[in-house]
Length: 281
Image (cartoon, rainbow, N blue to C red):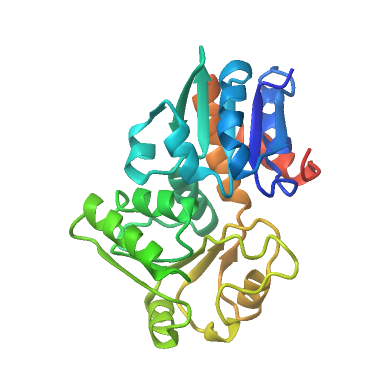
């Protein structure tokens, strides 16, 4: 019986079912994790369905901010960032949590083998994933958090949020059309986090002109899209260290699994489930 779901719009690309069911199977709990396409307009009704029928939900684009409003209660980390990617459901009560921040922190440590302390972080995008991870990073001792986003006012809200969490942190934002500012941020960043949905579809444009990346840059790139994108391929051609979003999905999913079951997540099995699972299954 399906007791856990991942939902989004779009969602057919998701590897969460293969990954999470591998974790459940490793603990002898069967394959209770499924997938469902839910539009933003359908989300309130889905919450009522989940309240009566499910034990847990993962949410992806574009539901994370709306889910924070619809949840009955929020954990402290979800309340701080105003974003939810995990629902823990018990006796009809929906607790919203965010595992994106800890997921990305652990993914960066796994992929690049270094601490975030003292680093300069540059985000492309200002949606739910960027919001949750940026707020989390304010607690990790980073030196600077910056944002490139088409809607500068939305990025400005995240700058203000980071300053509320840590008044001493350096936080700035700019539009991708502001060429000089983007190039300056790229030149001084230790990490570029590509946190938009660009790259999900094969005909998506890159988040900024790829010629702005040059060989010899010190930055490392983490693209939250977990299949190869033009950004990832171009970075690799320049010798820039780059990692796709697979490990973030695994690490945030492992934290969700722990919250739902109280069990340790079998990370190696989840990685195998990600690799061998068919998208959407």
